[in-house]
Amino acid sequence: MSRVRNANEFLLRFRELSGNYERLFAPRIAEVRRRYAGSPQKDLLDQSLEAHVRAYIVNAFLAALNWRLDARPEDGLPNVIPEVPVRSHGGGTIRFFDYLALEKQTNNPLLIVETKRSSAELPQARSPAASPSEIVSRGLAGEKLMGEWGTWLDNLRDYVRSASEQTGKAPRRAVATNGDWLILFLDPRDAFLKEGSHDPNRILVFTDRNDIERRFTELFRDLEHQHVLKETPTLVPGELSFYVDPGAVDRAMHGLQLRYIEQPGVYRPAPVIKVAPVVFLRSRYGAWLRVEAPPQDYELPHKSSDLAGHLADVGKAAKDLLCSVNHALGTSLHPFPLSKHYGDEDGFAAIRGVVEHDRDQFLMVTGDRTHYLLPTPSVPGCPYHDWTACNSAGVPSNPGPITVRSVSLRAFFISGELHHCAHRDVGAAKASPITAQNQGRCGPRSGNEGEAFCEIWRFEQHLCCRTCAFEEVCTKAAVFRLPCQRPGNHNRAETTGPPVELHYVRC
Image 1 (tube, helix red, strand yellow):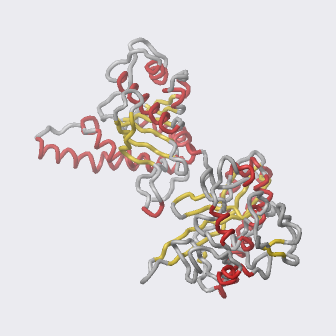
Image 2 (cartoon, rainbow, N blue to C red):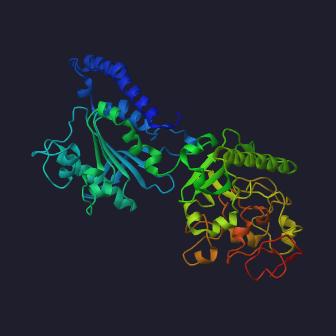
Image 3 (cartoon, rainbow, N blue to C red):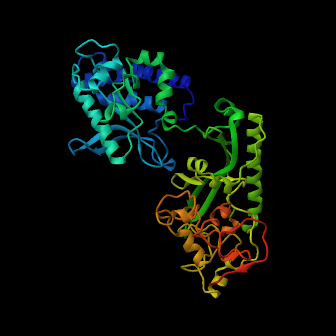
């Protein structure tokens, strides 16, 4: 199922799921119940079990808002998961969220959904109230409500507090629904945590499906996945002008989507790397957009003689994409250098150099480069591409020479190729963890504390740093020194510039 792109499409899918239930599922459920339980034929929207509401209505409703339960295994976990256990904040027992949606990178809670049986009614106050939202607000503040709503609000409060206690983050939304009416808490922290004011203006009550249809744009705006996540969806050039004012764009950078694949073989698996160009755009207000041109991707060749052609193909596609962006916006943006992006504290905090957004799927910024690989080393003539030369110099990488492209060692290039590094100390430095003590000397890094210094270590551990787009970034770090250096630079951070006569450091 494709992503729902706007509120109108949401409305069409919502009408479809409602119609399907009334026309297809409810009569079938009625017949089965009559046959097996002898129950009389009734309006099963009111009489069906909570399980029916979830299976036939809520699942499809969440999918129409891009909260997916049906992602393919290779896409990683879905963004909403049913029946997630949590230790109760109040009693310490294990309870279960009906639905819990998580932020992929952090597993912080985004959305809690609590379902009720279809016959459950909206809360009613014992004294007059101005609106349904005010009734819910009063119940949260301790006023007794009619029916079971005192218990239900207490349960939802416990879910929100339990999720907040386990992660340190309150969910961004909470929902209670019976498949017909829906209560949306725009600020669960305010509604359920101790410091909250229970502001009725932050509680939306949709009294039934007709009310949802009347206010569909409001619901889509406040509950759709990307809106809650506060991320702009990936765009193609033709959509750009709908999302950004061309005059507000102040930065463009090349980037790549990269997928690392462990391809099975007869004797051993082999690495396959596929990339696709993207363009990152930043507005002067600090918001970022990502632009792609699907569906073309490019596979890194296993023959070293074909690498130049691959880099040329990706480079052309990346430049064509940036040209399309400029055409769509009527701009003349030039790519911003990667080293300058890392030097911009606010810009880098918003979009780091390399992020794994699903297992073995990465999104990386390459700045004014069109690939993470350079065609040739920026420092020519280095002997340390070859393990035998490193062994003679007393600095061979362990456990030995890499002679085949390796999945276990995450080495796409092999000993003797210009993109391979066999130097023991370089490998050790790249694998060294970022810590609280050395973070200042590491400089800006994509990884968090405890992760490897090397920006691309998760998918490539033996690449020659002089053939990497991140070379200028990494060699500025106080902790990192390469054995092939320009004269006079081996005792301080490197400066950029054209290659000159080499000086090799063996001590």
